[in-house]
Structure formats: structure tokens, C-alpha cells
Amino acid sequence: MESESRVPSPEAAAELLRSHGEMRERVEHLGPSRSYALLTVWGALALAVYMAAFLLSFSLTAGDPAAGGGETGNGLYSNMLVFPFLLFGALVRGAQERFSIRSRAAGSGWVAKGLVLGAFVLLLVLNLFGVDYPWLLNPMLAVAVFITLAYEPLQQLSRAPASSVEERWANQPLSPAVRWMTALIGVTSAVLLATSSESWYAYASLVSMLFLVAVLLGWRAPWGLLRTGFEWGPLHWGAFGVTMSILFLMGVLLSRTLWVTTPVSIAAGAVALLVMLAASVLPARSKAR
Amino acid sequence: MAHPRHELNDAFQTPIRFSLMAALGRTAQIDFRTLRELLEADDSVLSKAVSHLEKLGYVTVTKGYVGTRPRTWVQASAQGHRAYQQHLRALRAITEGLLD
Figure 1 (tube, helix red, strand yellow):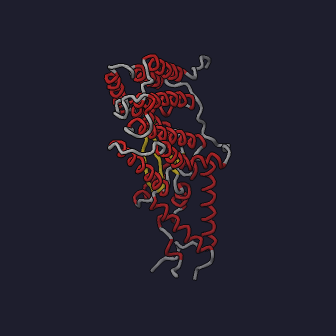
Figure 2: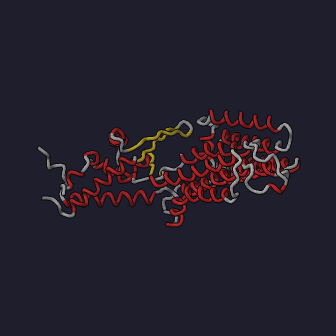
């Protein structure tokens, strides 16, 4: 015989619904925090730019290489794109560990992601087979990717001001191991950039990939990318953003033009190095404790 | 029309499990320590609730590490969210006085 004891009375059911509402309010007050939303938007931007740069670099016929046409579309400089992007992915995983409440895409979000991914694969295949298409589709895809990934966090950022309980994402002095990792990222990026106009660039590219493999294998170590991403504050992410932008831009320019001469590549490498070295030592540890 | 009590789900009949699903919502992934504070429960009670719902496929648990410090994240599965929403609809129907 069915027991009626588990069936709540209307009053008890109303009380349960009230407690549900109160719990939802408490959670929404706590997060996901605006900092987490900003990190998600930043990730969306990085992915969108990466995809556009990737397509532009591999494009055999799309667009107008009237600027001079370098080693157009042969993928030689794909490392300029892949290297920072793989680093970025691992670092973001570490940064996400800061936040006690995170948001994951709902069902409709996955459908939209699937569609833009399908569009990316289609354009990539068209590129590989030398099928011509309007180059505008490349930046349009980038915009579609950004909107798909950043829509919900941007809504959150525009919806409400920072709550009184805001997870702090401030710049803190880095631990010694993470300082070294930050500096090494700068050094490796600089080597990749500075040697890009040289005939022996392929060897430098190989070294950078070996570095990448090593850090990915040790990603959970105290010096690893997970810890590095966790400790980085907005300042460090900004510095890495500058470095990534330089690498992406150089990757596209090297693939499609002859503009990158030795002085240009060395200057690009120097900027990336200085930016990351500065980030590795900032903010300075306070001597007075 | 079937009585709404048939739509009630035994998985959510305890206060802690009900509150846990309320906290998780549709898309939130919340770490164990924050859940403990939100629900005002101790580790053992919350662990049992999470395990029970995980066995039913209503929540997913992800383990993470930062350095050597472990962290556990809990998120409602699509199935769990649908089941919880059905439970809420049943409660609303009951409050509208559809009991015999």
C-alpha cells in the first residue's frame, strides 16, 4: 500500500518551494562572479582570434596576398598559433580553479558551439582543398565564435553590478616556481618570434614544441601550467594576451606576406620577452611583513 | 489527470538533497566547500547526499587539484535537472490544492 506520509501537504509543499527560491537567490548572489565571467569572455576572444588567424594562415586562395605573398598557406608557421593557444588552454584551466562557482553551457549552448565548430571545419577543409571562398567568412566566423561563447557571460556582466560578495581576482606576487614558468613562457615565445625570419626557424619551432610537451606533461606540478594559471592575476593575463597577439599576428603575416624581416622578428621577440619578464616579477613582493 | 504525488521524486525527499539540487540549478558547477556553506551541512551529510544523487545520475562530480590541494566540483546533470524540475512542478501542483 502506498504510504501517504511522503506526500507533503500544500503548506509543506509551499514551504519547500520557498526554500528553493531562497537557495536560488543565495547562489545567484554568490556567483558565478564577474571575474569568472570576464575570464570566460577573454577565453572566447582568444579562441575567436585563434580560429580566424588559423584560417588566414592556411588559406591557399582566399583573400588577396597582393601584399607580397609569403609562404602562403603551407602551415610552416602554424606553431606560432598552436603554441600559445595550447598554453592558453592549460592556463585557463588553472585560473578556473579560483572560482568556487562556475557556469557550464546549457543544452542550447552546445548546439550553437557545434554549429560554429562545423563551420570552422568546413572552411578548413575548403582551404585544404584549395576551394576559393570570400575571405570575409573568416572574420565572420570569428565573430560567430565570440558571440556564441561570450553571450551568457556578457549578459551577466551587463545585468548586475558587482555583488558585495565578489570573488577577488587581484594581482598577487607569484610563487618562485610560477615566476620561472612565466619567464620561460616569455623566453620560448621570444625565441620563436625572433627566429621566424631565419632559415633555421624549424629547429627553434621544434624546441618550442618540446618545451610545450614538457610543461603539458608536468601540468599539475607546482611549476606547472595549472598552478601558473591559478596564480596569475589580470596583469599576468594581460601580458600573456599581448604575447599571444604578437604570435598570432606574426603567424598570419609570415604565412601571407614578406613583411617580416629579421629586424621585425627580433623586435617582436624582444617585446614578448620584456612583457613576460615584467609580468614574472610583478607585483613585487613586499619586503616589510 | 494523474495525481501530482506520482511526479514526486524520492531522490529529492530529504531536505539536504532538495537544497543541493536547488543550489546547483541548471548550469552552475559549485565546489564542495561552497556547497557545504550554502547548505549549512557538515562534510559527511553532504558527501552522502552527493553520492546518492551521483549514483542516480542526477549530479556529476569532478575532482581537481591546485598544487597538492584537492577540490571537488558538483554539477547537476541534464537528467538530474529535468527530474528536479518535474519534482518542483509536482510541488506547485500540490500547493494549488489538487489533492483528493
